[in-house]
Length: 101
Image 1 (cartoon, rainbow, N blue to C red):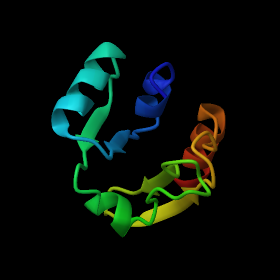
Image 2 (cartoon, rainbow, N blue to C red; image 1 turned 45 degrees about the vertical axis):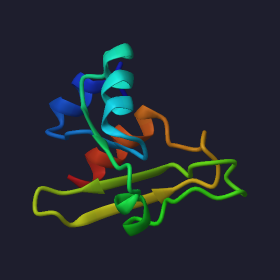
Image 3 (cartoon, rainbow, N blue to C red; image 1 turned 120 degrees about the vertical axis):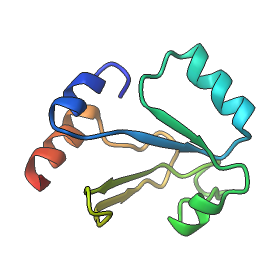
C-alpha cells in the first residue's frame, strides 16, 4: 500500500493501519519503512477484538483484516483472511474502492 498510496489518495481514500503493538514499536516500524499513511498502536488489542481479527493458532499469528469505511463511518466492506499473508492486492482494493464510492 505504501507504493500505491497516491492512487488511494486520488480516490479520496485514506489508509489507517492498526498494529497490535506498543506505540514505540509502531512508531519505529513506520519510520524504518517510510510508511506514508497513518499507523495506530493497539497494544491492548481492543480494536482487534472489536473487529474480530484477533490472532489464532490456525492463522499462525495475527489474522489480516481489511475494512473499507466510508466518510460517515459505515463499514462498506469487510475482508478477514485466514492467514497472515492473505490480504487483497492493491489493485484489487483500488477496484473495490472504485465500485463502492
